[in-house]
Length: 213
Figure (cartoon, rainbow, N blue to C red):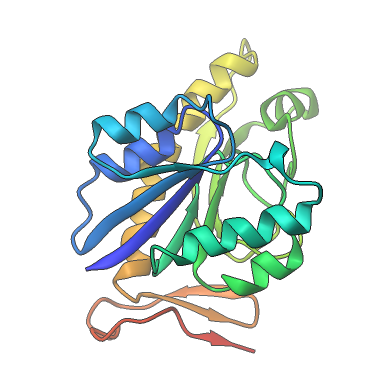
């Protein structure tokens, strides 16, 4: 059984999608939030998942918070760390600590529209398609190796809310799939790119995806 820890800052809809997906061989060991008022914490509790709060406002520096957060995460001995609407930029030392076993989802077709306000920027740019991307987390924001993407149309009368609603449906589909591939040992990182291994050749004695440089 592979242990997964999920970080949230708000409603945690992707966390809930992963939890409800019933991924074989996965146990969500904990849901951790940096915001005590995150509504996803109650959702996690209702699903029987252990929760923790580590409020970043109680720390003088980002480095101090990151160190304490890493310590808390490690106490659950996770095989995989999942960012699900976690709205804090993580420092380089933290990222290196979990390198190769930390996933994030971003509401755009990376490398387009990194950062915030992705739906508004997509509409303003006049693109015809948008979507979501699951990627490995690196020290550089929103540019980690891509695991899976989903595409949705941008309709002529779309506003931010309408496009976001269409994208989030796909987020809830592809994030559990990415987690499943990860725990099955099917994701191989080579030269900054993700290769999906055939299920028959993936290692059954899984520890972490191989990282080749």
